[in-house]
Image 1 (cartoon, each protein chain N blue to C red):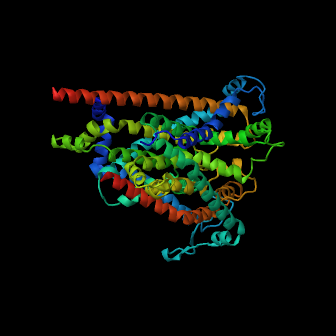
Image 2: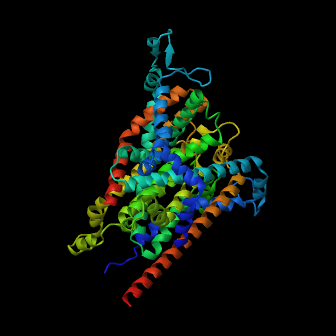
Image 3: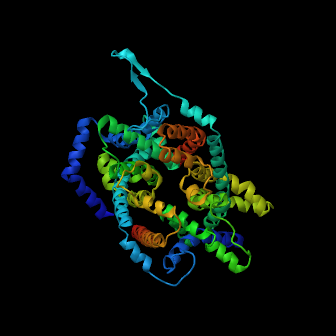
Length: 324
Length: 281
């Protein structure tokens, strides 16, 4: 620890760092404000402002130009008062009128809800088992849960293609076992999409669940047992309610991104399946209709705004509670 | 006394880990398959590794991805540490809710939305300022920093929250100014969290497909983009070889990290024991 401190102390004396600090001082950013300002400015510029731009362009129209959308502001004369803003709501009306968007939104929500429930069903027992395991094994188990997360998401989804194919691993195995006589079609199905989403997001479900379950006071369960409560009942009346923060956190971490998923439905799902992430992608890349894609993005954001804000509130409360 | 092992718990772990790892193992096993039909075993062969090394497209994309990932990880760690520090230590400052919201939103936001919004930003900026001129490595890096920033912030913030503040307070009582306290006391303590944040940002950037597809330009294809375009056409054994290499590197990294952390923890325990027994002497 001492050599790290010494290295950092030396680094701070270096000319470039001193120059940077004095530059910030000259701009008026000292101490605390500099610390807050740097990430703040970055995020406002590269996270918040883009959303404003998406909103603006969602009111434009597609045209073959560079960039491929119309400008919202037109000059009809020379004076400042001749500025006209042209808000074209046709993209939103189009989304509302065209059935496939509503259908895609509903399908995406359905898939996300089912996948979240499946992830919970698989992830909860695993998290519980790790939380109650011997302390010696917990670290290793957690590492084994996290390890797939560190390997490429894309490659892991690709692995499922090889497994679910008609002459793939699973079919060959079932044929060899004699359980089936012909290969089952598993790829390009909704089942494959659920499988893919659960598989990819499972670590996100397990980690918050484990964090909550690990903190649980086991003496509560002992007390319940002493009072004659059966283990099953104790589980549902004590453990589950106490682990609710973890359940909600894990579910949000799976549900919200799953609604807008693109890669898994494209690689594993039916070719004609309607998910909102795929539609946005096609509108943008294939149809080159940027305004339409923007409107779809805003619509998706509006659908997700309630769970998003809820998730953020819980995160803020949780970290503040942890800090007290 | 209740028994500590439960067959229900053990079997759920076994099945769970089998579910997680069988696909990865299948990737590795079939990378050594002589047959081109990935799932029909035709004999042992390492030919696909050779073909991979000859594939310039993949190698160029890999090099680009590594460069972007490294720059992105460093930038994200710098900004994320600042944000985590602000959120954990500065109490209720003006604009705290917004900063907190901005750092947690990218964690869950569907990537198609962030990708689209960043692309439109870059296009608008190019129109107004002339920069960035065309999309490529710079825009991908900026986009990735924005995404991975959140992960580093969460890690740093939680590490700082669980850290013993009395060490910092002691340093300040002894007359050290805040910057010095941070550099000499806080930073060495949270250094492991910073390293894991850097590695996490690196991994996420290396693996990102959707955002990179939106904000990249002609001639700047990242590794996931190349893999995706190949994989859409069906299974391909050289991708299995690539997957095996990546999985092996990651596994070795995680094992080494785990081992190093265990050693550090044991050394720390030993130091604490020695300090306690010396104090009692």
